Amino acid sequence: MKPSFPDYKLRCGWNALLPSREPAPALATDINSDVAIIGAGYTGIAIAKRWQSHHPNQSVVLIDSSEIGEGNPGRNSGFLLETALAEDADAANLDRMRRGNAMIAETLQNMLQDITDSGDSVDITRTGTYRAAASDIGARSIARYEAFLKAADLPYEKLTSGDLKQRIGSSYFQEGLYSPHCYLAQPAQLIRALFSTVPDTASCFENTPALKIETRGGRWQITTPRGSIQCDKLFLANNAFAKSLGIGESQLVAMYTYAGLTPALPESLYSQLGSDSNWGLLPTHRLGSTLRRTVDQRLLIRSSHDYEREGSASLIRDSLTRKMHARFPQLKGVQLESAWGGAVGFTYNGGLVWGEEQPGLFVSAGCNGGGTVKGTLLGRLLADLAAGEEVPDVTDLFGKASWMPPEPIRALGFHITAQLEQWGGRAEM
Picture (cartoon, rainbow, N blue to C red):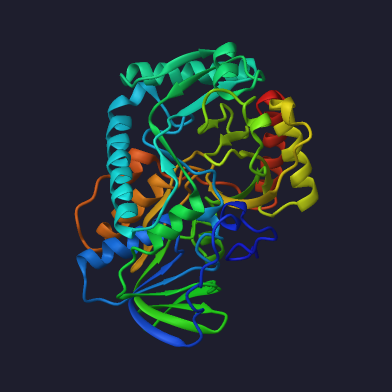
């Protein structure tokens, strides 16, 4: 049995840059609540806030296996997209895409207001995002995404290799495009700020993993290491780890991806990194490398994958450093200050595990790497669904996760497919 929660070996580099915070205490007794939520990430926080807007007098318990900023929500690359991911974009289904994008854009504006309401300082800026191709496979992906943007009448810039060299300081890429529809954030700062806006009427417990869920006497019970929670409605907002609690076992996979941050670079180096001082670049291949230059003049690279487990710390650091140097040979003497991993919930077809799975049990899982804004939207809609409100057809907009074969066939299929894709798209890795 796979673990029901992540237990990372490496500290999150984003969180390590922030002042320490005092976590909420771990649950150490048996309690009752009207509602319980497993996972205090973007989706879980959105559920808690939305539910209390519907039922302000009901009790809500929010638990997380880690500490806010150190768990999955603080471990991503900090991209908040206002439009679909490139691999999701489909010029043949523009009406569906427009409806989904409109909801995502509205959610992002609500998140920005929540940041303001928190009173916390958060590094977040609407920078737009680059996509760049280093091979013919990448170029074909760029062409498909450009066709979608053109059909959707969304603004973009087509960029040559020289344009990219001038803007981001790398001659690694053949061509690319720039879209303004993206914010970049310090993700650990962001999740801390959003967590601070959860109403005081909700009880929050950190370092409290859910080990088991079951029904008892018509209610749901969550077993944790030192206590339990009984509730009438239970929300799973723990993404891929929902399957270890018995939900989405035939649909979800935990993919571990890795990121590294350099130290703040001296002027002699960052002056060689192009004219843009704060930018992000998303890969054209789903297994490709993400890049960022931060406002404090660090470079981030996110790349490499492992199936259902966290890889070796030394191999992770070596792989990320090698890929960073390939893209920025002027940084050959620079090593990573921090490197870490994070688990992403993937489904075979990119669709969701979403809705009421059993009476009183609601789940939102399968973010497929796009969970910050979309996850917030899906959390709000899930709370609306559970409250009996009318909601859009979520699976029509974002897809429904398809079936995957059981282990060990699933793992074998993944490894074969990943090796083929990595070989074909190796320049994008």
